[in-house]
Length: 571
Image (tube, rainbow, N blue to C red):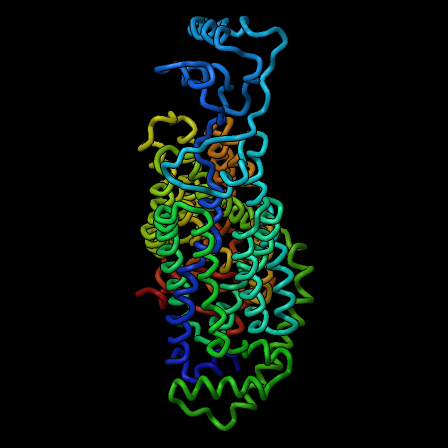
């Protein structure tokens, strides 16, 4: 007896589940990019210039002389300026007469050095204001936007662990609504504070709870639908996320103010508070806590909404499921230490983690790098989001026709080639630069989708969640460095692309040593996973159509074989 069998008796994918999917899950997925990525626009740094008094009025200059003097006084990076008190009108005129002379600075007062600019003026083509312009996060403070991104990444990783532990103790539902309250208060407060330290602290606090706003109710809903509809749920999430990703730059373009953008994105979390009565506690979690009566009440509520009547022996079924969940937990805890002791499994986990890191860094890095790309950053971000639609379809089609292994390798190598090509594209070649980034994002999105599926199929059932969670956590920890890698782009736009290109190439080449998984039965034990893929030819392409599980105990003892080799499995 599986918990999915109990759900089917309560109506399977009925009206109750459909309401949760379309009234909560789809809108929540739509708003998620606004929660996660609004900082890219809020912390955008427009072109800046050292702000000086009216030089024309101060030194009696006319025509283009004030602009020329500004260029002579201010350093090329617009961060330092010669003190104006050291000049008079006569000296200024002399300097302007020698402006074309490369050695004009020798005419300066002996020992005179530039001092840091204290005020700046910013290009307002795209923004009226950003957090970077409000606190002058340029020159010696130019690293601070990257610091905010890094703190947010660290906080998100820590928050995921802590809130995950908390949800195991007090339940998914109440943990979810606690995160909503913290997210709304910290998000709105971070917009209203008047100093950068408070802003960075509140943004980090906000980031610590943001992933759980989506993950906790998603897990609850995932457990309330049958296996047949879980792929549909994932599809709804992906489509809604991509739509939200395309809407975000349009919203930022219309708002033009980081405060307005931040308020709107933070306010989008408020409706989550009204889902308290709609979202039930996780029945599977309640069973794991021995709360069978409460589980039964939730199932009765679901069945009533779905228009079905629960069987009278349902409580006995729940007791069987509870016993099985307890056994699975013991097996998982006992086997997790053995997972890394097996050489082939250890190698597979290492390769999967490398691939996960490369895809995560490329996906996250390409979006953060939008401010370094040539052209309009709003349009670039929109296109980076839009390209996910064809990428997801291409990933699905290719991995269903050509398997997981070589398609994943191909897409990752395509990411590498596109990123390396970007290193050689001149900054003025806007179309070529944007096209290369779009190709990288397309391939990265496709690889992410295939890699996730392949990783899930490689790992043994008792430890599948543990293994995937460990790889995901490590990739999140590694991606903490990405904001500073992107920051190095100010010294050369090729630096971030070279880093991503080398990382993607490493992941792509190493992924070739993962066995093909499409068309093979899922590994049920650690022994199955350790033996999976042995004695296969390195250069092989599996074109198979279906997947089937083990039918007999004898099959479990045999090496897993592709269904294409089974005459009965062929169409």
